[in-house]
Length: 160
Image (cartoon, rainbow, N blue to C red; front, side, top):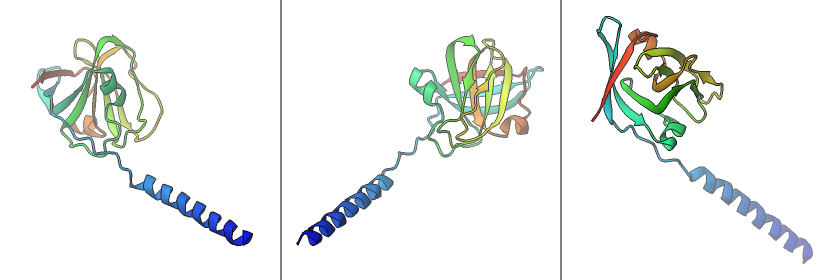
């Protein structure tokens, strides 16, 4: 009778473990959708408009820490603008970020000071601003080159 009890306990244990792992696979993070909160223009040194974006603002500590993490899609003309209280060297990385990005660092006068192009999804390498920045704009990777966005251009934005 003991061997049967041992086999029965082993069977129940294996079934319970299998059931728990199956339950974990069913849990999904809800899709985080874009929330248009403003409009942004990229202006070159002659005053000509290079690009426009619908933007979502990251102004709270939580929004700035999570940014575009966990999102799986973003349209070409959507972006996130981080607004910090002061200019200082900024360091971004792509932990838990699934969309490749161009990360644009911007001085207090709204002038682009540097661009980290084609930041790789899920890469935890540090992407520095190279100069103090008060604002950071995240757009889909490749758009900075495609639209001719470069150091020295200016950003103008307004909240809705």
